[in-house]
Amino acid sequence: MATNEFENAKKLYEQVREQERVSLAAYLAVHKGIENAGMKVVTGGTAGRGSQNYRGNYDLTNWKWVEVKGEKGFSIVISLNMLDVDPSTHNIHSLYDRIGLVLSPDPAGWVYTDIDLPLDEADKEQIAQLVLEQYKIFCEKKEAK
Image (cartoon, rainbow, N blue to C red; front, side, top):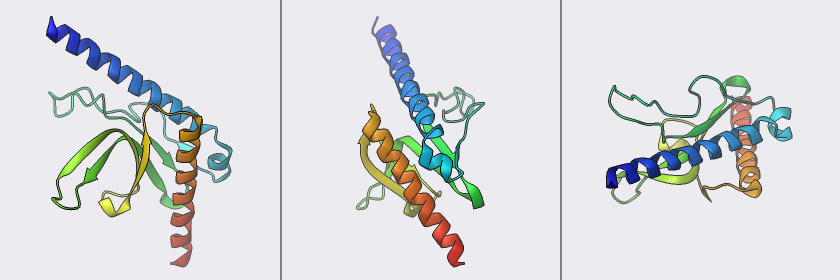
Protein backbone atom coordinates (compact mmCIF):
# COMPACT_ATOMS: atom_id res chain seq x y z
CA MET A 1 0.00 0.00 0.00
CA ALA A 2 2.79 2.46 0.80
CA THR A 3 4.22 2.01 -2.72
CA ASN A 4 0.94 3.10 -4.32
CA GLU A 5 0.68 6.11 -2.02
CA PHE A 6 4.23 7.14 -2.84
CA GLU A 7 3.73 6.68 -6.59
CA ASN A 8 0.47 8.68 -6.47
CA ALA A 9 2.12 11.51 -4.51
CA LYS A 10 5.07 11.51 -6.91
CA LYS A 11 2.77 11.67 -9.93
CA LEU A 12 0.68 14.48 -8.45
CA TYR A 13 3.82 16.45 -7.53
CA GLU A 14 5.15 16.12 -11.09
CA GLN A 15 1.78 17.24 -12.49
CA VAL A 16 1.59 20.41 -10.38
CA ARG A 17 5.23 21.24 -11.17
CA GLU A 18 4.39 20.83 -14.87
CA GLN A 19 1.42 23.19 -14.43
CA GLU A 20 3.77 25.74 -12.86
CA ARG A 21 6.22 25.37 -15.77
CA VAL A 22 3.52 25.75 -18.41
CA SER A 23 2.03 28.76 -16.61
CA LEU A 24 5.43 30.51 -16.37
CA ALA A 25 6.23 29.76 -20.03
CA ALA A 26 2.85 31.16 -21.11
CA TYR A 27 3.35 34.29 -19.00
CA LEU A 28 6.80 34.94 -20.44
CA ALA A 29 5.68 34.18 -24.02
CA VAL A 30 3.26 37.13 -24.01
CA HIS A 31 5.22 39.47 -21.74
CA LYS A 32 5.53 42.79 -23.57
CA GLY A 33 9.06 43.49 -22.37
CA ILE A 34 10.28 40.09 -23.52
CA GLU A 35 8.44 40.42 -26.84
CA ASN A 36 9.80 43.94 -27.40
CA ALA A 37 13.35 42.71 -26.74
CA GLY A 38 12.89 40.13 -29.51
CA MET A 39 13.10 37.15 -27.17
CA LYS A 40 11.06 33.98 -27.45
CA VAL A 41 10.20 31.12 -25.12
CA VAL A 42 11.44 27.77 -26.43
CA THR A 43 8.50 25.41 -26.97
CA GLY A 44 7.72 22.15 -28.66
CA GLY A 45 8.87 18.61 -28.22
CA THR A 46 10.33 17.97 -24.81
CA ALA A 47 11.29 21.59 -24.15
CA GLY A 48 11.30 22.34 -20.46
CA ARG A 49 11.05 18.88 -18.98
CA GLY A 50 13.40 16.01 -18.36
CA SER A 51 13.32 12.64 -20.06
CA GLN A 52 11.26 9.81 -18.65
CA ASN A 53 14.03 7.38 -19.63
CA TYR A 54 17.26 9.23 -18.89
CA ARG A 55 20.15 6.84 -19.53
CA GLY A 56 17.53 4.22 -20.21
CA ASN A 57 16.43 3.65 -16.64
CA TYR A 58 16.02 6.91 -14.72
CA ASP A 59 12.96 9.16 -14.69
CA LEU A 60 13.81 12.88 -14.88
CA THR A 61 10.27 14.09 -15.60
CA ASN A 62 10.36 16.09 -12.36
CA TRP A 63 13.22 18.20 -13.75
CA LYS A 64 11.51 21.36 -15.06
CA TRP A 65 12.68 24.56 -16.73
CA VAL A 66 11.69 27.31 -19.16
CA GLU A 67 14.20 28.47 -21.77
CA VAL A 68 14.16 31.93 -23.34
CA LYS A 69 16.30 32.82 -26.36
CA GLY A 70 17.15 36.16 -27.84
CA GLU A 71 19.32 37.68 -30.51
CA LYS A 72 23.11 37.36 -30.75
CA GLY A 73 23.15 33.94 -29.07
CA PHE A 74 21.40 34.87 -25.82
CA SER A 75 19.94 31.87 -24.00
CA ILE A 76 18.68 31.68 -20.44
CA VAL A 77 17.22 28.71 -18.60
CA ILE A 78 14.82 29.42 -15.77
CA SER A 79 15.18 26.37 -13.58
CA LEU A 80 12.35 25.24 -11.32
CA ASN A 81 14.88 23.18 -9.36
CA MET A 82 18.03 25.25 -9.21
CA LEU A 83 21.38 23.62 -8.65
CA ASP A 84 23.54 25.08 -5.90
CA VAL A 85 27.22 24.67 -5.19
CA ASP A 86 27.89 24.96 -1.46
CA PRO A 87 30.62 27.61 -1.08
CA SER A 88 32.24 25.80 1.87
CA THR A 89 32.18 22.15 0.79
CA HIS A 90 31.67 22.58 -2.98
CA ASN A 91 28.96 19.90 -2.75
CA ILE A 92 26.22 20.21 -5.35
CA HIS A 93 22.59 20.29 -4.25
CA SER A 94 19.33 20.56 -6.14
CA LEU A 95 17.10 23.19 -4.59
CA TYR A 96 13.74 21.76 -5.56
CA ASP A 97 11.02 24.34 -6.16
CA ARG A 98 13.56 27.21 -5.99
CA ILE A 99 13.77 29.37 -9.11
CA GLY A 100 17.18 30.16 -10.54
CA LEU A 101 18.58 31.43 -13.82
CA VAL A 102 21.23 29.52 -15.72
CA LEU A 103 23.20 31.52 -18.27
CA SER A 104 26.15 29.16 -18.69
CA PRO A 105 27.40 25.74 -17.57
CA ASP A 106 29.74 27.56 -15.18
CA PRO A 107 28.13 28.31 -11.79
CA ALA A 108 29.56 31.82 -12.10
CA GLY A 109 26.84 32.32 -14.74
CA TRP A 110 23.99 31.31 -12.44
CA VAL A 111 21.60 33.74 -10.78
CA TYR A 112 19.97 32.64 -7.55
CA THR A 113 16.62 33.97 -6.40
CA ASP A 114 14.49 33.66 -3.30
CA ILE A 115 11.45 32.72 -5.42
CA ASP A 116 9.87 29.34 -4.67
CA LEU A 117 7.03 27.40 -6.27
CA PRO A 118 4.14 27.92 -6.46
CA LEU A 119 4.43 31.16 -8.42
CA ASP A 120 2.01 34.04 -8.22
CA GLU A 121 1.76 36.91 -10.72
CA ALA A 122 4.29 39.02 -8.80
CA ASP A 123 6.80 36.14 -8.87
CA LYS A 124 6.33 35.71 -12.62
CA GLU A 125 6.83 39.42 -13.19
CA GLN A 126 9.97 39.36 -11.05
CA ILE A 127 11.30 36.47 -13.16
CA ALA A 128 10.50 38.38 -16.38
CA GLN A 129 12.37 41.41 -15.06
CA LEU A 130 15.37 39.24 -14.14
CA VAL A 131 15.41 37.81 -17.68
CA LEU A 132 15.28 41.31 -19.15
CA GLU A 133 18.07 42.46 -16.82
CA GLN A 134 20.29 39.53 -17.84
CA TYR A 135 19.56 40.18 -21.52
CA LYS A 136 20.57 43.82 -21.10
CA ILE A 137 23.85 42.77 -19.43
CA PHE A 138 24.45 40.23 -22.23
CA CYS A 139 23.87 42.85 -24.95
CA GLU A 140 26.11 45.40 -23.23
CA LYS A 141 28.93 42.85 -23.08
CA LYS A 142 28.44 42.01 -26.77
CA GLU A 143 28.57 45.69 -27.73
CA ALA A 144 31.73 46.26 -25.68
CA LYS A 145 33.61 43.64 -27.70
